[in-house]
Amino acid sequence: MDAILVTGGAGFVGLNVTEALLARGEHVVVFGQEAALPDPAPALFARLPGRLTVIQGDVTDAATLREVFRAQRIRGVLPFAAITAGPEREARDAQRILDVNLKGVLATLEAARDAGTVRRVVLPSSAAVYGESAYAHPVLDEATTPPVPMSLYGVTKYAVERAGLRLAGLWGLDAVAARIGATFGPWERDTGLRDTLSLFLGIAEAARRGETAVIPPAPLPSYDWVYVRDLAAGLLALLDAEAPPHRVVNLASGMDWAPHYGACLDAFAAAFPGFAWRHAGAGETPTIRWNESRSRGVMAVARAADFGWRPRFGPVEAAADHAAWLKA
Image (cartoon, rainbow, N blue to C red):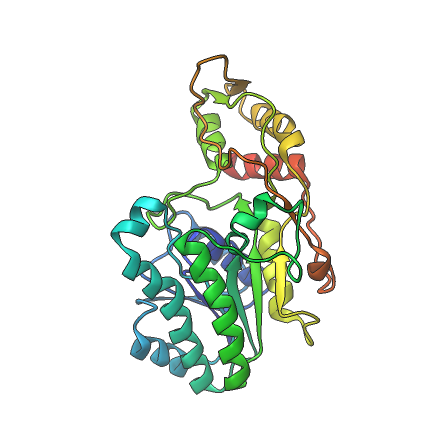
């Protein structure tokens, strides 16, 4: 059976993509630093109809990557291994961030080129490529909003997008770049490779402990989230498209979630009766770290719709599904 390679497959998005691929009967090859997937993924994934192969390795190791492509007949690639670094890690470990986020993808593309079996590569770009433009434009459009990445993560993702599409064209690979919006949901955890975790992870942890979550005072800044189950479906749509109508695609909800935070928190409270929430009072420090203090534009999703993909989960439905997953 031909396989789909997911580098960084033990990470947050990687686990969800792997699960979605296994659910439809694919052979998935997960390649990354971990020798096994985190619990309870192995037991859960074993019940799915697909086949899973986990290979330990470093995405900067070109020789090992070539061997993976040689030993496994890879037809699709999602090179998602990455370090989502905050300022302190950027200052401390810039070379490693560049090596993993950019050189690791380029090494994967070279191995895919040499294998000669790959039909599609989905390049992992990010909403972070918009950078400062996200605060200046109400809608973040793939064609008209200028990318002004600020973080090394955003810079490397834009480099992956541009260099990846360029080299794919030169090397005869078919590639699409997915600009992934802010994501939350099942399998999110602190792996040590993501310095900025979602506010929903903080809410989920407080809910499981039966605590009261104190969130920042209203009004909360505009923010565009995408539920990870929707994201995984969108990535598979890009992987499967016979003739991609676009080469750079936002994958996001396309809506401001700020007006819905209260209802989302209520959904967690309904699932976890010991959990409650409230806004911080004057001078009080919130217990939930918010991802943004400034309002951001929402990501346009018309191009994604041209691939036949639209989010299925609204804010409340996503929160309720996440809470149910946590309790399962």
